[in-house]
Structures are given as C-alpha cells and as structure tokens.
Image (cartoon, rainbow, N blue to C red; front, side):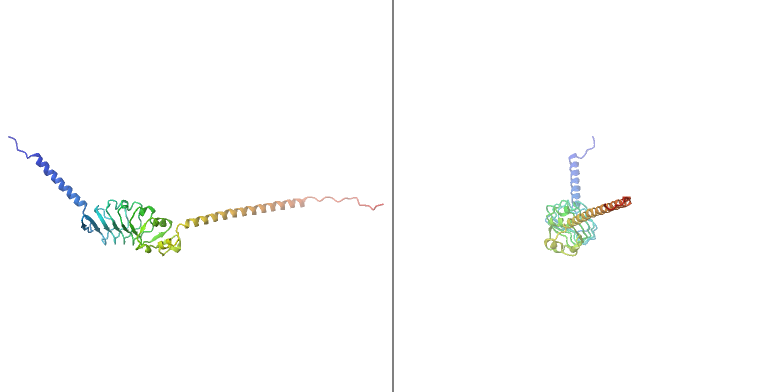
Length: 257
C-alpha cells in the first residue's frame, strides 16, 4: 500500500491563512507611525505629531488616514512635489518654524479639497508662485517670511484665503518699491497701493528715453544740414570772389557841344 498523504484542502487552507496573516501584517506596517513621531488614533482619525524632532525632510510613511500633521519646529528646507498627495483626509498641516525656502506649483497637490489650515509662517520663503497655493481652499499663514514684494506676489495673495489672525504680520523683506520694505503688505494693498504699477513706470521711462533719442537724432540732423549748407554757401561766396571783375570803359566822356 502507498503512503497516506494529508488532504490537499487542508494544506490549501493553511497556506491561505498564512497569506492573509502576512497581508494583514504588511497593511499594519504600512499604517505604522513614522519615526520619531507620535500618532494617537481617535476613532480612526490619526493625528501625527512630529514637532521638534530635528527632521530635515518630510517623512515618507505618513498614514493615509491622517487628519492633522504637525511638522513644525524642524529643519525642513525642501518640500518635494506631491509630498502630501496621498493624504486625502488631511485637514490641518503645520510647517511653521522650519527652513523652507521655496514652494512649487505641485508641492501641495492632492490637498485642494479637504485642507482647512496650512501654516507656513516663520520660514525662509521669498517668492510664492501664483499657482502654488491658489487652488487651496484652506486658510493660509505666511507671516514672518523674508518675502520679496513684487507684482507676482500681489497677484498670488489676491487668490489666497489668508488667516485673519496673522495677515497683518505679512511684511516685505525686500521690494521692487522701497516704500513697501518693512511695512504690512496687505494693509498697504488694501489702502490702494500696487506693486504692479512698476512695469508701467518702467515702460513710460523706456518710451521717454526712446523719444529723447529720436529728438536728439533730429537735432543732430538739423545741425548737420545747417552746417553743410553754410559750408556750401561759404564755398560759393569764395568762388564769386575769385571771379575777375569787369574792366572799366577807356573812352572818356567828353563835354557836350
């Protein structure tokens, strides 16, 4: 008689059970809290606290069901495109007190619908592209950044929902117009000032310079024409002077009879 083998259905059941356990283990790891952060879970909503952790970049393994992400008071200087695009439930993102120097058009891709608060205050941001934050419906904090005030920044700010509690602390570190430096930017814009008038002034100056150039060319031509005519007149006069004079009549006029 041959060797009795165990039933194949039992072997298949054991194999399937081990695969399910392994899959659940992988899913658990995928939802794990990034080191060295804390991730308290409240009824399935995750808050990720990574403040004061010395982070130099955004963690890659942030749980997808995160609703609050605190990355403030770190050393983050660069935000890669799409760094938060998998966080569809994110409501508040705190990136304040870092060393962020720039934000791109795709930095906050995927957050347009649900994000309610974005804190970018106390960073090193100088310029804000028009398309970088315009699609967000969140309140945005931009205070205490070394902003370079120019027309592009003015156009970007008009499309943002700025946090009213910190809007007066947005000031120009440098500016295309010196009178804006160190002053609350939004207050100046609300009062009727404009950073977009500079290109028009530059154009006016260019037109004046062009007109002056044409005027100078006309004057130069007139001077050349007058001098040229004077030279011709002088030569003509000298030519006339060089002609021999007509001889006097030799027949004396006698007395009459």
